[in-house]
Length: 171
Image (cartoon, rainbow, N blue to C red):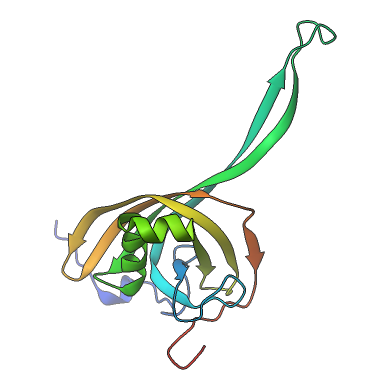
């Protein structure tokens, strides 16, 4: 028995809507006169996934007063970020990350990079500082490249709304 495939059986979707859930893009703060308070956002690529894993460091002590039970207190907080990123080959955002990793002078002076993970559907975004700890090209096809990105966060991420992309004209 033959199966007939017709275009009428395909559902219609609005091309501007996020069909498979949220659409996230990763940006890095980089450019002339860019600062933490007045960022110049450069697109790195689309996030197939992006995970924040917060960690709390605990200092534990056991004294004769506590018996067998240890007493603990928070001694620090951080987070790990991991993502699979799909990007156009040789975009500026990728070069910013690679240069930070490979150039000792830049990484020693700047200490970390500022990123924004942007939800394209509602323009909400999370700004975070992280030290890139991994930037691996996992596949390449034509002019698209897939990267595996990992980083260690420094400071508390901040959730914001109303993201605007910086362009050569300013916004």
